[in-house]
Amino acid sequence: MIKGVKNVIMNKECLSKQELMKQLGQFTPAEKKEIRDYLQRKNPLLFRKFERMKHDLYRLESRRVQCEIENNEKELGLLNDKILLKKEDFLELLLAIRKKRG
Image (cartoon, rainbow, N blue to C red; front, top):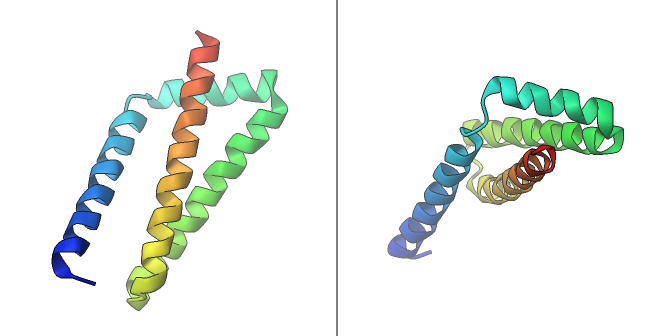
C-alpha cells in the first residue's frame, strides 16, 4: 500500500473514532444507567440486544489488543473496521432510546 494512501485511511479512522467518542461522551454515566434501567423495565428484548452489543464490543476490543500484542496487522485492520461499525450501531441505538424517552 502506498504510504500517503495509508495515512489518509488512518486519518479517516481517527476522525471517525474521535467523532464517536465525542458523541458517546455526551452521555453521562447516570444517563447511561437510566437508559439501561428503562430498557430493562420497558423493553426486555431491546435490553438484550443492547447488552449483546456491549458484549460484542468488549470481545472485539480484547481481540484488537491481542492482535496489537502479536503484531497481526491484517486482522487488526479488519477488527478496527468492525469495531467502528459496532460502535456506530451502538450509538444509534443509544440516541434512538434517548429520543424515544424524551
